[in-house]
Image (spheres, rainbow, N blue to C red):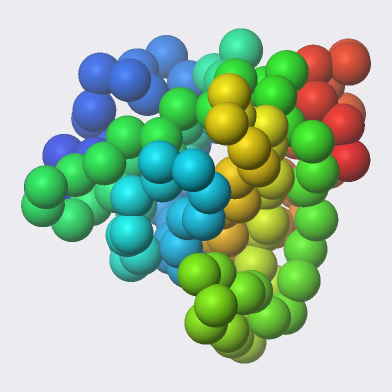
Length: 125
């Protein structure tokens, strides 16, 4: 799936905010082993990641399950460190079987971190 196709994925239609991202990785119970380019979208009730790689993966995170949002210069995913000149936006959330983590590079990480941290009680930082 190309980045253009990821941006037009039906799961992100009507999103409040959409950005192209670099996914450092996902970690947690049942999370796919993926990294690379994708699209991050904020819906009114959930955060959605659609990877650009084929086969594409869709990760949907209900905002009420987000437990922490922060910025970091080094991201540890599945025992490996990933570094980037820009800050990683790290999002942690509670799943039915444990805690999951996603790390992405977005154009304006402070804006995303602030927006996800101040959701009127739907998520916390």
